[in-house]
Image 1 (tube, rainbow, N blue to C red):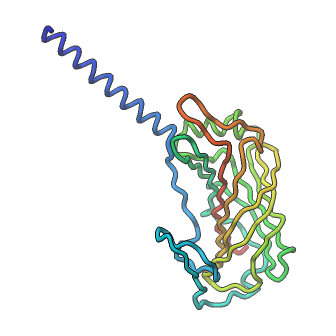
Image 2: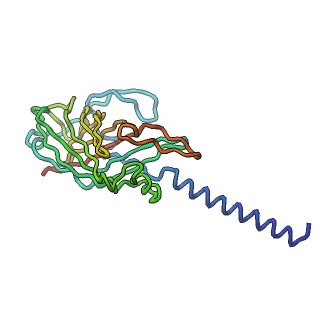
Image 3: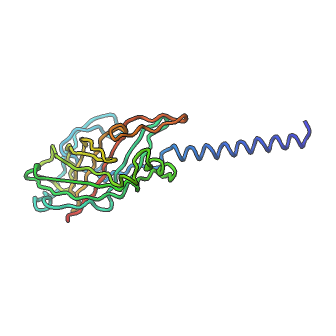
Amino acid sequence: MHKKAKLWLATGIAAVAVIGAGAYALADDYLGNNVEVEGVISNNTNASNQTQEASGSGTTGTLNSAAGAAVTGEQLNGEWKIADAAKVYFSVTTSRETVNFVNEAVSGSWSLNVDDWAQTAATATIEMSSTDSGNSQRDGHITGPEFLDAAQFPQATFTVSSFDGLPSEWTDGTAYDFKMTGAITVRGIEKEAVFASKAVYQNGQLLVSGTTTVTFADFGMKNPHNVVMETENEVGVQLELVLDKA
C-alpha cells in the first residue's frame, strides 16, 4: 500500500477511535450516575437497642444506646421548619446501574407532640424543576412534559398522616426507627406511601431519614427506556431532612 494511503488510513482509524471514545463518554455521562446519596444521620449514631448487620462484616450485633442527655418534651414539642440542608433523592435502576437524582429545594413544617403522636403533623414540598442528576440534558427530559411535567405541576408534596414506633422519651444523639405513613402527590396524582425511617435529636436539630418505593405508573408515567438500556418501573424515594425549631 502506498505510504500516503497508509497515512490516510491510520488517520481515519485514529479519528474514528477518538470520535467513538467521545461518543461513549457523552453516553456514559447522560446514562450514568453522577449523584451520590448523602445521609443526614451518621452511621456512627447510637442505635436504640436494635439489632442490625454490621457494615461489611456479615455479622449481626446489638447496638445499645450510649449514655446521653435526656431530651425534654419542651425541646421536642412544638413547631419545626425544614432547613436548607434537607434533600430528597429519587433513584432509578437501569440495566447499567442505579441513577440518582437529588432535589435540594425542599421546604415544609412539622408540628411535634411526643406525648401524643396522633397530634403530630408534617408536610414537605419539593420544587420539581430543581431535580438534578448531574446532566442538564437528562434533567430537562425528566422534568419535561413526558415525565414530571414541572411546568404544569411545579411542586410535589408529602403529607404525613401517622408516625408509628417513636417513643415519648428521647436521648440526645440516639437514632429511633419508626414508620412514617402519608400521601405523596406528584403531577397532581396522590399516592399513599410508607417510609421506613429513622429520627435523631442532635445539637438542637431534628434529623429524619426515610425511604420508600413508588412506581412511574403510580403517577401516570411510563418508565424511561430506549434501545441502549432498560429501566425498572420502580423509583426509590429517600428523604434526608434537617429540621430547626421554629
